[in-house]
Length: 136
Length: 158
Image 1 (cartoon, chains in turn cyan, brown):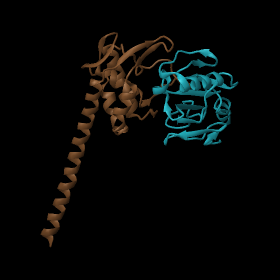
Image 2: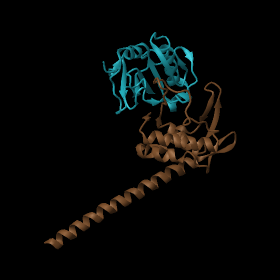
Image 3: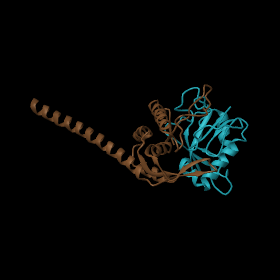
Image 4: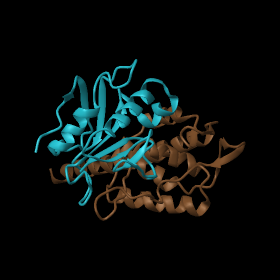
């Protein structure tokens, strides 16, 4: 399986030290779909921080199946701190989640902006602090 | 010669033990200082209709307080503090909130956990996710849930 690259569509990808970058090609395609420098109108996404991919979770976690990625920082700022402030971070997070909903293989899309599973609202708890995206 | 060697060994042993004592004592002082700082924060929980939740006004201050600490050690302290019912200087609807609520706020800015269903999808609810209006029993359940997660290392740093 491929590794998540260190750059996607011009956006720098940083990783937590515990991250195993080895994920499915479908997951890479999902990231390519929603991680773009101009994803949010009027703002520039330059960097994301992946807090989890294929690591630290046990089966049958989607992470351990190489089909999920968590993003917890945007442009160097933790979502848990920056999202409630509005502005750039919120706009970018909202745009990433909205765009991932348009990815044909999307499964879970949980984060501060919306929580959907297979395209339907799914009121999962938590996820005000990171985006969790997974694929079928 | 033997006597000198024994004396040197004893000196080194005492020094190592002494360093260990002061290190532990230093850690405890730092932890108490952090909790005291949390208790003194004059923050507010404000309801945000857009987010459908309360947002705490001193999140950046919490981050600054934690920045000087070893986060790997602090998460144990924060989890154990969740059911601390001492009143802090922070308020929700003009009423003081428990220190445990602030500890949970700090923990949730540091690590996260994703509870699972049998098929690997994320579970709908988890007792470790609480609101600042949590009852005493909910705080206690959250503490137990987080302690279990931390023990099993089923968390990620944000």
